Length: 223
Image 1 (cartoon, helix red, strand yellow):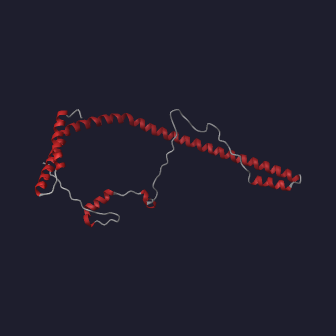
Image 2: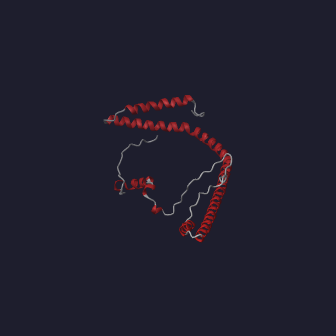
Image 3: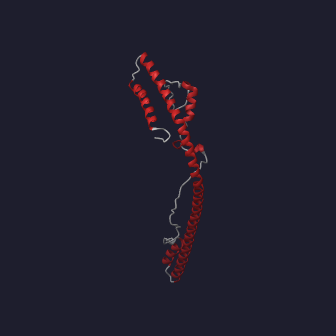
């Protein structure tokens, strides 16, 4: 229970409220008399609501002001730290991606150089075989020179950046470039907009896929 509301005060309010609630639960509205009684209980419940709200109004305001003050102090300390973490994370991410791109480029260069060496060696062997009169073997070597079988290149150890207490996370993002092309399963229904139309048009509402119906309830005045 809040420090601003005494336990005895809370228990008193709760006891009086539950008396109305219990009567309402047990009431069966099936004639004019019970209908009038339901109206009286509804009005009493509304009156009790007002009493509860009034009792908690000042404590809530005081608690809210204190909570806001604490949150503002906390945020004043946290915001610079959170901002610099985001900035550092992006800087490290960009550098990590740059290193990865460089490593990939170096691997492609090594692959091209290895392919060139294999082609040159195959051509040399083909030339030697042709000079020795082995044309069939020379043709096979020429085929090897045109489309050499490459051995996989193992990336050097240590190309992945690491720092104690950190880890790389790749998060895929998106941006909408043409809203009209987005499939329906990725669209959500604007229920607020539909509700405004239904409240305005009532039974004359004509929206495909929507079933409009009325529901009768009773409002109780607050005294």
